[in-house]
Amino acid sequence: MNLLLLDDADFIAPDRVRLTDRRLRHVREVHRAAVGDALQVGRLDGEMGTGTVVAIDDAALVLDVRLDRPPPAPAPVRLLLALPRPKAMRRVLQGVAAIGVKDVVLLNSWRVEKSYWESPMLAPAALREQLVLGLEQGGDTRLPRVELRRRFKPFVEDELPALLGDSLGLVAHPLAEEPCPRAVAGHVTLAIGPEGGFIPYEVEALQRAGCRAVSLGPRRLRVEQAVAVLLGRIL
Image 1 (cartoon, rainbow, N blue to C red):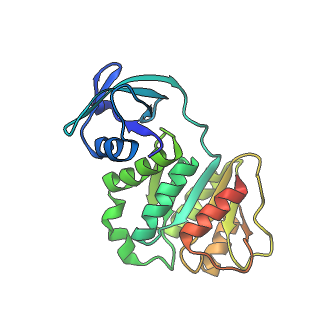
Image 2: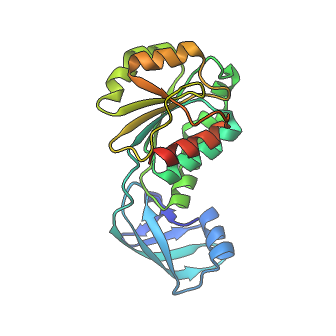
């Protein structure tokens, strides 16, 4: 945890917070903080700063906080991601939140198993938990927005062209001849398929909507690996 993320409910005064949950355990067991120590803190969807320990014991951690600087700028990428396996989704969501992606659309694909859509991981509280863990890792406070699209065709045909706007639309496809661009200037909308990739019909539909098919080369990567490599290359 590189940033102690604070929620509105944590504040017991305008500049003081009291924590009793996993953050207390982390500060005690990992940071081994004592009274007078300073920790990096941030208010969810707000500013960042420093929290000074004024009391800490088995029951609670009390900090005096000074929030005086903005969080890092968001990554200029919107991610369209075929719904991953629930276990992989935890890692992906934490990773994209840490990198600074603020807009994520989880969409259906022919290779996405129907059972994935019934996963408890898609509950708002479960999604938020993984995103918060990513923000704590990356040192950020702005919570990403995650939207669900269970029907591929209506989303791609009816929503995606307007969503692309003036951004560069890319769809990761291992058979594409064009390599994925590096250090792209401007905003990017990036579509990444499930394990095995989008089927040809889906790639063609994404291309008709305005996305260019690009490749990382001949190697096939797992979704969480592909997300990290593609975002790193684009950014």
